[in-house]
Image 1 (cartoon, rainbow, N blue to C red):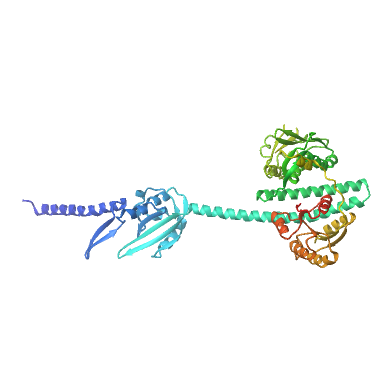
Image 2: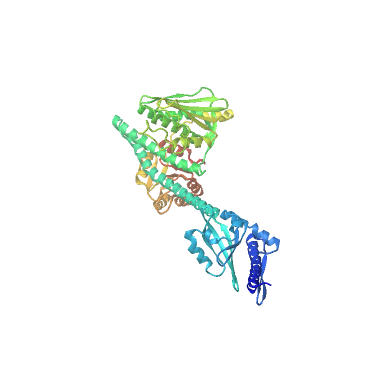
Length: 554
């Protein structure tokens, strides 16, 4: 017989085994829940059994949650993760299995914990941004959409997480792009105003020099002073033009007027214009062009002249006193090659690759007195590329001179076209006319008026649009030189009213500092015959007056 004590111990051991057996089932269930193997579990209560669904047993809905582009998780009241889909695991850089049973708070950035608790504390559906932390520690922005489930003693949260990293980056990129575009617009507007403001005084200076040239005695010192003023005004004018051209090219708004151009004749004309500058600086310029028929290219003559002028300007600037430069034109196969070579300071090998980039300065060691803005060669390359041309530079090194070669495709043309391109048009003096000048810059207006009177024209100058309209009928001008940036009533409106008053025969020339494409378009709409930029050379103005109401625009 067993003793009462032994019997009691056996009963206790049996009870313990029964308890272990009863505990094993919920432990297995909990493990199954954490591993995602259980869709629901049953709890027996005094009022009967209750089913708690952890995940829908219907495969389509479960598949949809797993394939979501957003992260999804179910949390209990203590924020323990009961379930997490694959996307959330990817976002947090953890495996789905390791997420289950973890606290979601582990993945909230420390500085965002208060915001997160506020988001959860409402006891209802909520949405807001929160900073999350990946398993590796990196912080990223996310959108959290939270739904709260509460039933009797059981509460849970359904959380949907959207990674905002890429969206934030795109938003920042768009904002940066908008800011850049706005800055670019402001830059273009600034350049347009700058061009206008600089061209007015430049025009007045140029006009004054022309008047001194015609009226002043040929005293050497006075002639020297006039030449200095003219040369420096032209230099500033070229800088303004280059700045505006760079802006136009960058925005794709530059306009080319392409035609058959004889490169030999054009090179000779530009060289003649620069020869005096070379002589004043005590440098020599040699021009070499081939005999025979014209070498024609399909190009904008003004822009091509600008290219040659920029290269000759560099040759003067970077060649020491007593140095030499050569301008050569030659046909090579189906292309014409124009070369500017000098004995100047040369170019270092490391500077050559970036020589044609905007704002490139090259080696300043020997050019420190005249470094330039670094836009001339960049502009030359862009202008040539727009016309099917190329440019190349070479140098044996510092102190050994440099050579720039421009190449453009030759065009075949009829004999008549070649004759027109090669012919030199004899410029007869314009017949005397009644000319009305409308310009608020008094010095500029009076200067142009004086020059025109010296050429025999009858001229009246007024300084605002209202005065122009009040005198138009009585004075009956044949030609109007009209500024655009007038106070009160702008030049476009003045042009429209003058056209209504004087009819279609009056020649209206917009002489302005505004040269953007939009400005030219407005001139066309206002029926202005020519839109030209200040400062306008005397011979160019005379040519406009000779041409009368020609349809082309300067």
